[in-house]
Length: 213
Image (cartoon, rainbow, N blue to C red):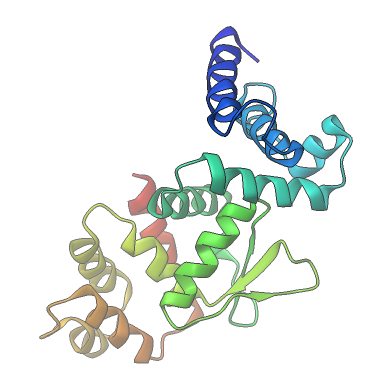
């Protein structure tokens, strides 16, 4: 930990520890506080669950549990920011460029990211689908496209541009855009259209490019 990180930890810890009376804070709560600040520190920031588990000599399953609980307790959860981080990582890794069996596979090691993406899908009437590895989520390309577009700075304008640029069938493009005043309506129309894998890939690539621009 840096000097500033140590000072912040000491300040936050004492405030929480003394809030309910000296000696009354359960050990498990103390563990969550310490874990949270360790994960925010320079030495631990960005490390995988495997790496953190090795450093703390804990099973990876407990690391995942601690990550989720400590974040919910001591971290401000901004869904839009977290979903945006997922999009940035996907666009950098070009994961959207490989559509297999109508699904994209997304690696989600961080339980907070997984929680927020699952909730996003649920609000859209879609549920998370996992393979044997519970850290790999399978998602329909069109749902991922919605996620990216909704996190753009000017989603309506960008959506119109993407459809006009990447859907070669002008009739389909008109059906999606004409007389649809809201982004929600346009996305619903897009889902009804039968588009090729190449078109989906182009839409995803274009949306991710607009996001990271």
